[in-house]
Length: 338
Image (cartoon, rainbow, N blue to C red):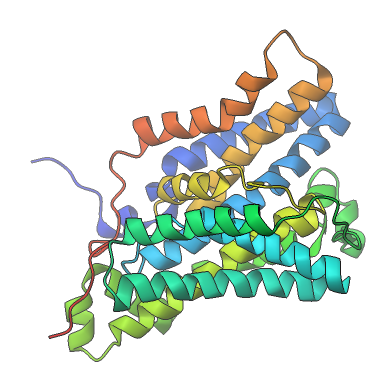
């Protein structure tokens, strides 16, 4: 008889994400060795990895909160783009970065409401609904964007006292702008909320067996609306990160496919917050290495090829390693209340 692992082992985070955990451990050893040789370059690569992973993990959290309740969201790209644009405009006209970030989050929430209305109430095809949001965002930002607009600055790093002086990890984890800190909090908060709270249990029940959830008194429509809007706020925050923290300005289509990469990160992370964060760090590392290679002028590798590296690695990972990832059973299926 074929041996099977106990249920507790199969449900263990490290077992379910053993590939990604193994990759991160190998990378950690390489980083430790590199730090002993070139600490300045190592700090630069690690800091860039965290920065590049921030919008990806926020987009992945947006996707997983929707899909955990059965709503597919491929409109993350559009939510991020409009969040970046609205946040930028508010910063231009008010000079208040707190209001600008809040406006970006609110725009993501409103687009989440639109997606929920199309998917839950109108029961539209959810892929089409997400595509509508992406096209809408491209059209609005392309039409209303004006070159030459200047902001009142961008969010600056806030060192956390003595923690920022810890060797290697201090400058990387404890000397960042506010949205980066908020992202780290949201990863942990989402993990707790999804797996250790009544709301998370109800969300997962709605995504797996909405009929059974409805039978025991869970409002399936409400859960889907709230979770899609909650995730939309995170996508809007990712957009605000791009225009208010990473760059400090806005450019047309500045998300550059990060919303779609976030979907791949979510799948690689197996629809879990911590798994998505680990996957985002791996993709962020490819961005960081790409930048560092170009900065150092290594070899004769064309920059166009290096720019495609994150996408190539994402395709390879999804094609080779994620064949057994199982999405929520009710994903993409409109619910009809009897």
